[in-house]
Amino acid sequence: MFFPFHDDNPTRSFPWVTVGLIVVNVVLFLQLLSLPEQKQIERVIHQGFIPARIGSLFSGKPVRVEVTENREHRFLGLWLEVPVRRVYELRPHVGEVLGALVTCMFLHGGWAHLLGNMWFLWLFGNNVEDRLGATLFIVFYLIGGLLATGVHWFMDPASTRPVIGASGAISAILGAYAVTWPWARIHTLVFLGFLITRIDLPALVVLGFWFLGQLLEARQAIQLGIDGGVAWWAHIGGFVAGMLLMPPLRYAVDQYRLAQWRRQLEDWPREDSDAW
Image 1: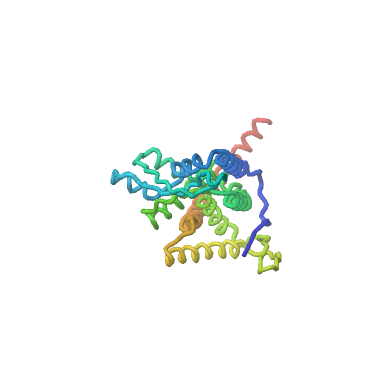
Image 2: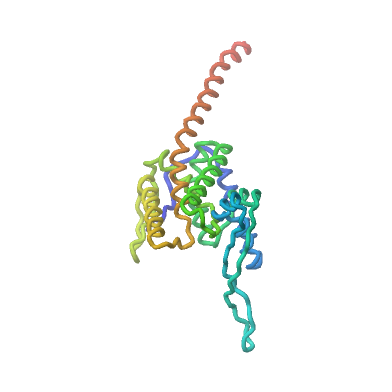
């Protein structure tokens, strides 16, 4: 198993948007944890993305979502948690369904889910933000997340499992990083059973192995008919989206900055002559 922890790829400015996204995700996660369990489930159901709800907008039929909740019951003087199945019926609602395409990117299902996503966002997002600029980076992040969710929907449009997490948008960042700095050195911990060692690998190798892992997991999920609660196809779709979006965006940014530099160069003699 690989764990990248640092890259030799300096930035020119502080990644304010990347840090802001991390803060927003952490705050919303803590807010979710502060709710009672039933309220947490309801928020995930209504603000997470459920693929079958797209079809319900056209069919007009409600979507039934089954969840298992833990309820406390008194038995022989003891309070025991007993799993209880509950069915939520979600009627077609355009605003809620479309809104969930965005809100699902800012919810997480646990500490490991949150910390893993935020670490990859910090490690690779700062360079992508530095390359694109703050405003374009936000647009890229949201579009990458939407495309990732779209791929997940395309692969399983009848699914009633809520999808949450920033993984799709962050996967787009990984794809963008892979095509922009393929040879950047990534300091990586490698776990070989009880042996842990550190090696420096090109970004293309680290992210290539990550992408291959997503493909293998997605294939296994199809073969076994289970997904383990992970939206593998959203990861794959986000990564590919990032690889395709980054080159034209990078070119547009370079042309804009070149045009600015030329205007400044043209204005410089005029300002100098006015001073004389």
